[in-house]
Length: 572
Image (cartoon, rainbow, N blue to C red; front, side, top):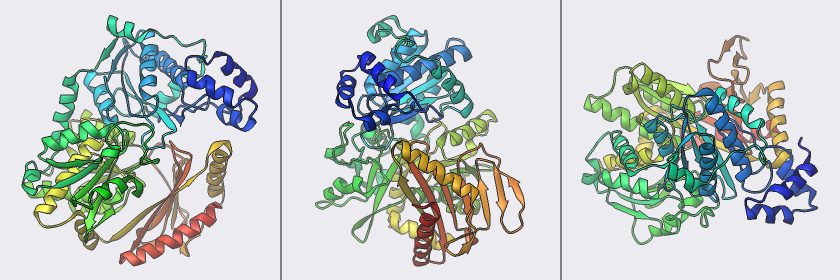
């Protein structure tokens, strides 16, 4: 643990670059708990970069932690690349633009060419810029769908996906050597622009991005015929211009935007949890339907890499889960390509291990392979890159994760809510033209393939004590694996940290050929199961439940029993 009082005194003396920090430090003087939470540790830099509460201290997102990370990144890049360059983007969060420009100044002072967007843009456009300019790395300032008090700093590798474990570890080694007050090089931003080492990204890059997104369409022209009506919310984030533009170019003209959530606002006044998984974010959109119904409600998170939808069923709007949207997209794309005779040879659908197994069942029905990867879209990006190097990119049909992230096309190597929004609307238009709502289509899929009910439980654990509690929970599960869950035998235990899968009936052990990760999976009879993991970006324990039954009522009952038992097992 850090020397709390020494650090507090040092920051009170030297943290003068941001007046907000001085005010905050003065405000907590003498409050040991508040000082402890800000200084007991440093923000951890990993493959997800940095993420934390905005404020003063080593355990906060501020100009000093951002600059220290950027100096470490600069040192790593200068050691690993000849004439490195970095693309930078930022979202609508508090201080994102400030942190982005500060990072640009540090990189430029270290002789690294910077390409920076002139305005806030979706995260996938950062991935696109890295590849467009052939950069050595990329940085985006975002905390995705976290509450307003958070911000984050994500680093990308030259392929356009988030840093690999190896690169992140090397960068972290350099970061640890940087004194955040006296060891950071920086320069004036305007001077950097003037001498050309900092360059604003031009409109031609935006146009190139749109062109590539439109290539992912499956049924061009269907949207004009169906006259789909959409209500869209960017949740005060980055999607407003780009989603609306791509929908317009794909023939969807009947789009109304939620006014309260239209313009960028890092305070997220109408949705304190700006996450399209949560029903609350659709409240404003649903109010707009009282005068005029829409076929589809669409919401993208603040950095526009995730998208959620609500669809009509008997006059009421129902939220579709991230799994259900991914399931529908898989069926829609594969069936359409097959019908058109355009299904590639040896097609591959990519998903994470916590994404519904129904995706695999659908893929198998169309002769497609399924790749099951660890949580984190970078792993999907890595697979696309491997296909690209073998000239097999056309095999990639779609990639997804249950947390509302999707990607079709190889234009970026991260989840992309711009292309996903386009495809969801196209899909809705396609089925509308056949007289089928998306809700009805989902029920048709369950009837065709079976009832797979996927449920995610989140449990928050804030602060130092919370982090320790999560660690203790995972340790306890490893030391005392459950033999039964909800009265059903655990048939197999997969520990992705040790890369071992154990058949509990025979004792047979097989190797898990994926990178190591702090994840535990329990296989139950009949394709049901449970996966437990701590979040990589939030102070949460996540429990993923799959309940398979002949009908929804049976699956819901099984889910309830598993949920109650898992809480007992974890001691929650």
